[in-house]
Length: 238
Image 1 (cartoon, rainbow, N blue to C red):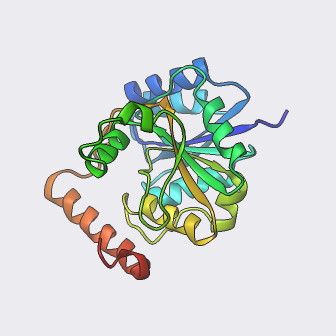
Image 2 (cartoon, rainbow, N blue to C red):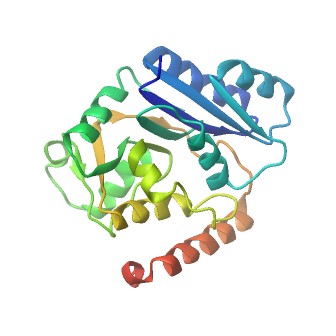
């Protein structure tokens, strides 16, 4: 039977983190396939566990850029909906149903993100001084096109939308920038992006530390500047 939902995650070692992620997916998700992309893991225990846990498994023997790894996973999906997620996340019970409802109720919706700590932080700073936070953000809300974005930690797409924009842009090296870029790609094709605060997904953050310190900061700055150059019309004041 064809799964309704395809879940794509990229993993690099970090067995304990991946075990926790997969445990929550298996416990709280139905009618899905789990596609795991091993991005050059070296820990044999982690490799064996990922192979055993995935409905679909693909391995890059040498670590590649995150956008390329995600696109490989997307190319293997059979579901009508595709969740592209970090493996250091943990899902709650019945997490998919509200997100699916948001996509289905809004014809132009191409992507929905649950609430995460990073999202709450962004909303707090954007709406500083807001006194009615709970009431205002108690239902799904649409982001402002070419202004608001969601981070790439947990994104649920309509498959047709991902297909139309051609997946993630592979011009961004290592990791960062590709998540901002795909938001703008969706906007450019007429799609809307929603955040659904009815679902909260825990995201540990920085579990896979490929780069740290100054090197990481330089990479982020380089990719962010590349993103701005790709979308000059909309990012002049960023």
